[in-house]
Length: 554
Ligand code: ACM
Image (cartoon, rainbow, N blue to C red; front, side, top):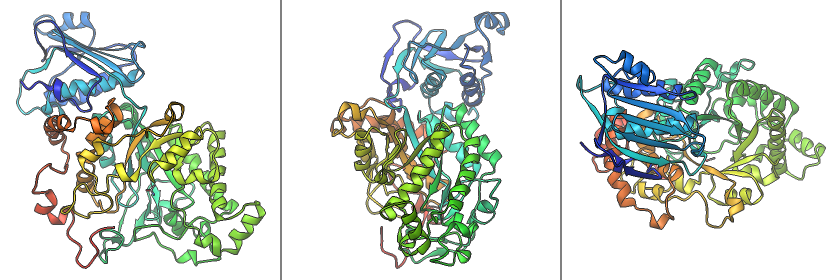
């Protein structure tokens, strides 16, 4: 049997063989799961996933139940799940020793992360949805693992505006995040190219705003178009299902409603939201190009009331403390040209258009704070001053994050130079090669806490997230190709306490990746293989084709 203790990803804090015999724990038809209070969700997850992969019933009950009901005698083994408040909050201790496998977590989440480790210990086939052979015996080594995450915010952002990902795909991604012990799903729901969440009081947001006539094929400089209509949205019940499914996996869904820029889809649906004295907003359509649209929200009371209405529905659907309001890449040309916007600047006593953007953000900062939530936005929101509880997603490098942390704001580090997974992962032969080259090793050597921060400021780094913008990812296969294997390296950066970047043992990570590729195969992930031919070279129509006549990159 391959010993999967030595190939866990993300690497645990410590793992040692338990000094007893037998050296193996066995799962079979007579294995019981004894779920102590607060851990029932993990028992259910184990039964649904490991139960399906192994074909084993994984009976529910304690030791007495097992002995009384065991078919032909006592249980072979018991998986005991318990909360032990002596363990770190999301941490766990996993002790497998003879007939007993104990997972003790500092919280229900800790127990769940321990169960993810248990699945890895059983081998890649434990990640499938049905057993390959009937009656197989499942073994894991007798080990003691102590583990806890480095950061409380270990996230991935998915842009479902540029390309819509149907609900099933989102649920699948939540499973993939959980398999990597990631616990935040930042859901980028609105942008110029599509509005993706049903809002009951403003039905045109999805009737009109969720659909575009055509799509730029490739990067923004490409001369090619896909002339098929594209769109889709999540109903409020879809959102409830996604949020509940995430919660069962101890993942928080942070919704993003992007304002005041990246709003062309909303303005196409409700022209009164735009700067109607500058352009004919009634003739706007959902954007069919990439980049930064000039169409931004008009700074009116009507706009504020409209988005308060949107956010009231968003707060009912998403229990997350943090609500993301975007705030990035706000083009100011229309405000400069608009007599109404200029009058508003004067009336509010603001200096210029930059302060007008801050006025938008501060309004929703207060609005969310009054409702017991906290605003988070892209680092541009720092420019006009923020309320004390607001937090920043630092995307334009580390700079915004450093300034925010030094000013006492919480920060999520997601610099585009390091963890934008839409960017190509090799030189030369990538489909749709955009952005910086960021290899698996580059991501593995990403450090979320810049050394420039003193300990007090560093404590404001809540964690990190990888961002997945989908301009060049038209379907799940393309998303998988960009995200994997780099998300595995990212997960280890977010979870494990790795040494400084230059000292990280990438050779050992690559060795463990050999097993992890087998897990990803079992999970059905279309990752970028470590060696060619690459899938897009075999199936150019699926993963992209070279763009004739266009510059090679942006
Ligand atoms: C961003 O990449 N515009 C946050």
